[in-house]
Image (tube, rainbow, N blue to C red; front, side, top):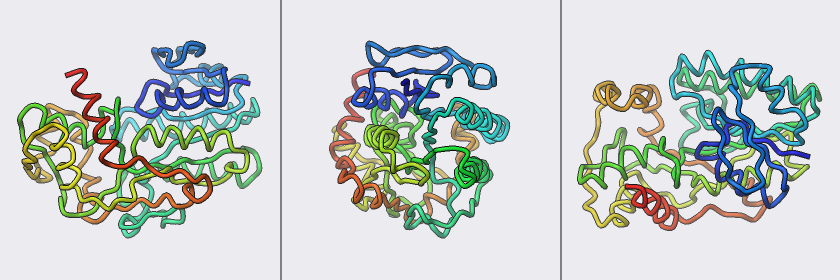
Length: 311
């Protein structure tokens, strides 16, 4: 049967499609304007706000992966996410499809951020986090009632090739490439672990094709090296043969930056993640599958290589 990716064109959807060919030759890519990743991919153009199109996209699917990224905007999230997931869940139940939901850490309590496991306190300090909490509860409630077979694969902040919305890409790598200073917010001496997108995609494909992984929450492999934000910047600068010059961006400046880079308007409520250590523990996955995260030096090398190729 078909394995379907809803949101196939993003930083997780593309590498996930590459990984799924290890498990099936029937991969359906669903997006507004889907593009083939593998030669045999089935393309399904859909507006995922439309319930009928969601149902048609899911029909016949053995596994449905949700890797879609709605506009990084609170109002858009509140308007689109719960309605979208409601339709996805209903369609998965109707067509007896398993659901793999790719998630982030926003629903975790502020006190959990210095060391996050799958058992972290659910107490979102941001409005976006409250949206993510709603989505998590929608899935877990259906699992608890034995009406849906699903799992949640959760990642930390991203970095990696073809991931243009990463703070490391936008604020650090792209600025250093232009001869500018890397921009940071929060405390640059605090630890910040990152998930490398190809690692996240590989783990998500493994989980989706492991029957006993379902009806659980999983943290995908994430750097165990406790690098500070400044050390990440230094790694990027080294790959670019640039000076690791840094300019701290105060919270009020994010609103001004948002005039030119709209996504920056959405960062102020997330600043708490950068003002304390941010350690995302993926031991559960590592112990179960014996797979560790890519070393930061290697991941940064590939990230910079991908950026300079298209510069």
